[in-house]
Length: 72
Image (cartoon, rainbow, N blue to C red):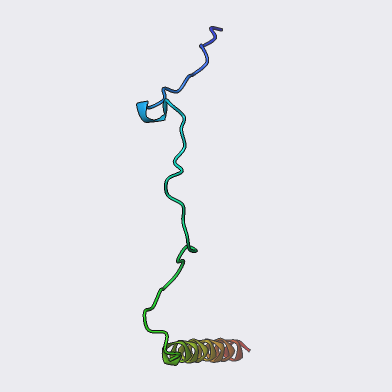
C-alpha cells in the first residue's frame, strides 16, 4: 500500500508572523442577555408570564387527569 505524505496546512499571510492582538483590553463585563435602559423595578411582564405558565400547566394537568379517568 502506498503511503501519502503528511498533510500540511497552508498558513494565511496574516498569521505568518504569529503576533497576538494586545491593543484592545475590555474594561467591563460582557453584557449577556436583555439589557434594558429603564430599570424601574416594574415586574408586571414577569408576573404575567408566570401566571400564564401556571395556567397552561394546570390546564394540561386537568386534561391528562380527565383522559386517565375516561380510560377506567
